[in-house]
Image (cartoon, rainbow over all chains, first blue to last red):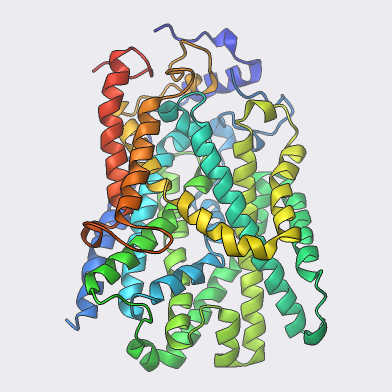
Length: 59
Length: 468
């Protein structure tokens, strides 16, 4: 498929896109980010679910 | 081609990508803004809902766990594209839904934000009226019937003035109103410290005989609560320069305050049978505490409404018919339905629209599933940012007539999966809900179906997918 040409876009948008494409935008989240996301979004909830369940059982 | 707000439009008021030099928000500024946006009246309504099924300790753990899981889903769904390219939540849906199919998530965003903010501003007006009575500014027996409509209109006017400054207006207000988050924690401390034995002994009024079902429902309520932040998040995190800057502010600034403040409603409904802190704080600490609580409620709703109206106004820029409108005109367009509802049909809206919003909320779990699957599994993180701003036939995200049927079918299937497991209005459940929740299977169904159908789309050379 042919890539759309830059001429199709308004000049200011084109300038913005070039600036964004020139910046290092390949990475979204780095290793520390993944560590915190997995810790706070998976590990912590898993612990909370287990502790809450046990607390409710009187255990 | 899409979006041309004009050369004079400030970057944070457009849907064009922000360049690195414009993305100046650090973790603290982002965290304060997100915390102020997240903390509102709904926190104690959420706590009240959980308190119907679970006691304080179980409810607190289940709700917190669910909120953190939901927040992670939202961050994984909308976060990567927004933080890489500095674009809002709606623009970030174009690679999945198509250069015109994004209208579906945009509809969800607009209805959700405008609906919820109408409710918040009406709450704001009612709290401000009660505050005026409590301060002796208005006699309790002669509150004018026009007070709530007039205060709603005034709130819309103040929001309009604040948001004339775009994202800067949001942060300026957040820096002041974030204090209410700490007031909320103080209120929770008061209730817990004064009534701990009663709180531990209290039994939920609507608990089902099945303990696992009650616990799963507490978890589910947490998940759907933070999933409802999907419409807000892109407009905020795009102001930060990179992924590392947004993770902790989102998870701790937006994900954590919601359950913590919801404990207010949870504790209130269990001990005093009322989730409204302005009622029970008066009981616990006297009239002065009641006034503090009313001020808290008023400030909380106002901060959230400002963030919501901002995100909604930015989202409107994606519509071609609105792309050349001024920021002022778009703000008025966003505020007009809120003002109309607050002035003319506040009670009707309270009675009926909450159900509609519950149904709309069902869509956010599968929407996250589609986005996560598309970005990480189907596209393997390869996004053509230039193509997001094109909707001509042959452009990568044009698919068929600008719509990707794979994403729409997957979204629909995810919604069906949700309501097949749980009726969001009655909380009647079906099948393996008690083991799985409803949001997580709905997101999984949408993700799996999107991956499968996208293979079919890719074989037809559409979608700009990377080679297999």
